[in-house]
Image (tube, rainbow over all chains, first blue to last red; front, side):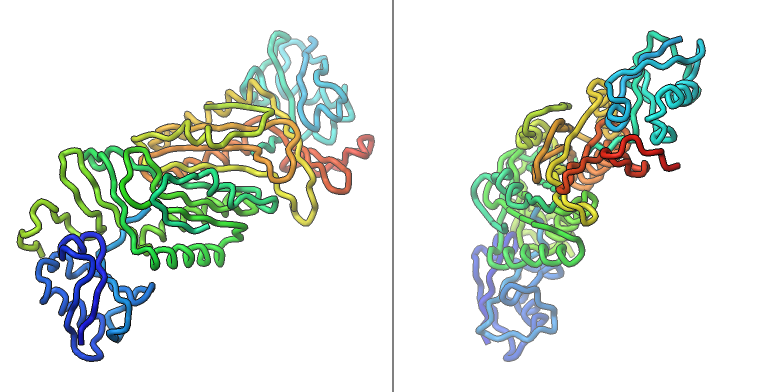
Length: 81
Length: 81
Length: 151
Length: 151
């Protein structure tokens, strides 16, 4: 299934766009998304180990199951303040 | 010798005035002042154990020797802030 | 008061929003753009946020702090966009009956903000380079985006 | 900036006086007149100072804090006279390169101020009585000044 992922900060800069599409297995999990994202957008591999995923407005762990209807965001560690 | 003592807060209120005179032995120390003050101004005895003495703008301990030329202040524990 | 803004932060109104006759203490924290970081010179910072999530997380931080300290009121305003030296990036204000709680709660909110709220800053260094700040990630120079990643 | 004043404290100018491009953090503390203390209702506080000594001690507190933390600037303004509910009695502002030092230094200055600076407050309770606050001294009611002291 195709997942639209909103990117921020260095992830957005490396992808060169605000949103990307990532193909993952049906009922794929966050861990699948992270793996597929780096395979399909290799310029983001430097961030691979550090990417955080949010579903809606909450952080999602690797086991979270994703659906194409979810609002998914992906970004490196935060640095506000 | 006669020492003029500036009072603050509850000490001023109990004495009913901003400055009092206290008679202490020549070359008397802060400890003498505290003792004489309570003897000569008995309305301040409730504060006796708690009185602090400053010479100039510094706290003075019981051993500090006093002279009539010193600017001496006496007051109970502070509560600013 | 929880707000993300591209405008200059009016920290007086942030502070006034938490004052109360029931509070004896107000602590206001301001984060400001510092010129020197580890010997390098900054000319500006750019802040970017994931706004909906950031606002949700800021509200959660205040609720979390309220569960731990007797907070009368709390407010957080974070600036976004380009900030020059000395400008205020974030204002956090809390009021509590007693002073120690105000310091503890204010500091806690700041620490948590820096851990969980999806806001990022990009250094604009005096040497002309820019660099996203991502704690734990080795610096990846923007000027060499095609460089092979260092694992 | 070190100041004792009978006027309303302008905490914005206190804060501005410590801001600096070399600081990444500013902490401002405001003490405000709280209505309830241990179940009793306050209508006002009266602050009295020994001005010369208080200013000297406030300057010493700032020097002491600067010897312990990398403080860029620090300011203390204390109000004197009668303050109504919610009014600001004291403003302490410090700026430091990093946030933890600003919180630690600000809190330290407050703690020391309450220990050593010759300023006193008198409670004006809602029941019409007044009472000087002297930590460690048993309350001596103003309305019974001729009462034998309780030892």
